[in-house]
Length: 371
Image 1 (tube, helix red, strand yellow):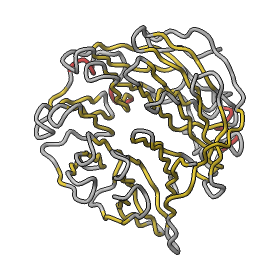
Image 2 (cartoon, helix red, strand yellow):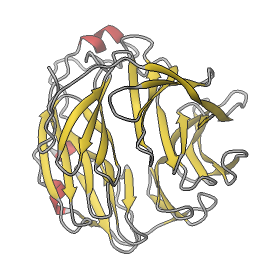
Image 3 (cartoon, helix red, strand yellow):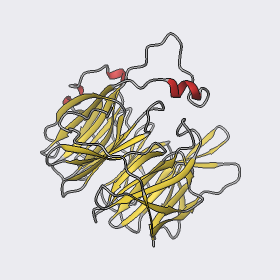
Image 4 (cartoon, one colour):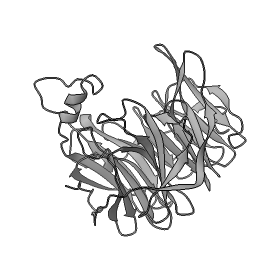
């Protein structure tokens, strides 16, 4: 049975597609962390321009974690390490210089593409992600139905009343993603997922793989907040469905792409749907039992990219798998892209700057799409 969609995003039809090999472009390694007895976990990647890029995460040596970033100012030809003071969660950049970093303890701003960071005012906590439409007006989202807005660049924040409207206990609710198609039209996505009712606590998936697969997914609430006036007003919606909407991206021409990820017992690890934000209609355009998709991107030329890993078994995201990327220019026929054989990961992140497309793995690799 196909999963439900949030209200205003009806499903039209579903298709499963096979990828067709494409050898015109390939993903080439640009950065590889290679230090003895330590590893680099990358949490997010952004390229606000073709020249300047930054990836944030932490180095891990034994039980010690050191927040860090790697930055480039020459399009990935050279990278340098810039230490951070707090563990990073996500990045957002408004332009080549001005950006924000969400950490476990606050929000930081840079005016030099990550070369320097300054902690900004009374930060709403906890926070997972921010989005700014200009240097003054932005939003922050996080657990417990938390959505905050600022109109002075983050110096002061106030709660967004519409975020509390959907049903569900805030203790088990979170808003996790923000996307804008135009300066006027935007969307915030989230979910409510109460714990399972069981007389016995669940064991971790890696410790009890058979149990993880046997557990049935249960439908839960997915939240959407939408605005058509640049954030002056927001309309709240909720719908019961399987899986969680973890990524949404839009292009100004009306096209949109959404990623829904499912639990271990689901037949498919993820599903991609095409969204027309002008009409609110959606259609499933890709799903594959062996492809754990963790990020999506829409390029200015209209191409859509799906990135993730090849599932090594029924239990996904436990054992790193080969990185896989598909591309399509019509959302119907998907082509396999050649990826450097060294690229393995549990999750990957995409970043774009104009025609330049980049990919980071959660184990310290950064790749660039090239000829």
